[in-house]
Length: 325
Image (cartoon, rainbow, N blue to C red; front, side, top):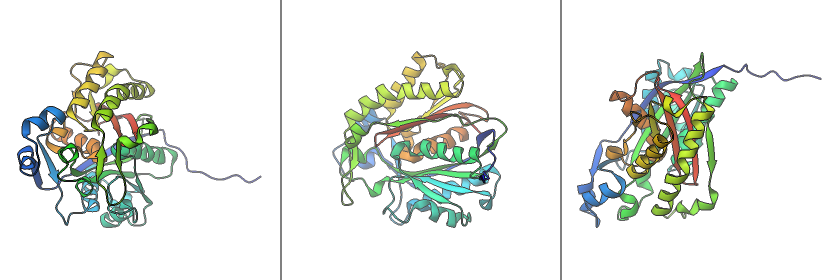
């Protein structure tokens, strides 16, 4: 019997570089108060956001994704031609086809690279990172560009204060490549499809609808155990975690999950991402962008153990431990 030849597996994977992009237009709580019944204090108390960025009318999701991707490639020290696959996590493309990834690959010069999108909404980046890591580890690709990109303003009713105060536009990216030892831990992921209607877009003519209280209760009770399991599968203790970077959904959610982690053994000096304050909720872009911002601000350094945790519409969730490049 003949046997198939398959690529040799590598011993580990790691993040080689990071990058992010935000539009120029800053929209403050005071700006929103001019067009809807809200105010700065009301928004801060409920979601913790002060500012967010909105893309211009002519600025496309693929534009932002390509900008973030190019920065991540440059940071990795590679060339676009070194990229063996492109994955874009997004839930806000203006149409289902063509996908974002193929367009981004072409724009950046990663011509003919396999390219596909992943839609797990706010958990999308962690899903895509796990997929990219598995591709490298199995030998399917040497280097994978993983991007989270969203133009949520295309799908939000600008007069609906339950959503318009929260969502924003941005992109974040990482390059995943081979490592001498594992620096991207196993993913812990899953879904709660019985709550699928909690965050939804009814049809192509509708805007995002969110049952805020239901999502809040789910996230603050169900996500911490998943994060703890991701640490355990990586062979670590919660006390080993230097930084916690959850999806930037709501500052109250972030702080409550971090409190639960500390109650189970995480250090008091564990750095917690609070990028939402000045970036808003950017869905799949929030985790890679927060990582990039935290490194630039000196909040995390090369070699730090970072716990990532994505969660959102679906409802879907995914988390893994990585080392900061």
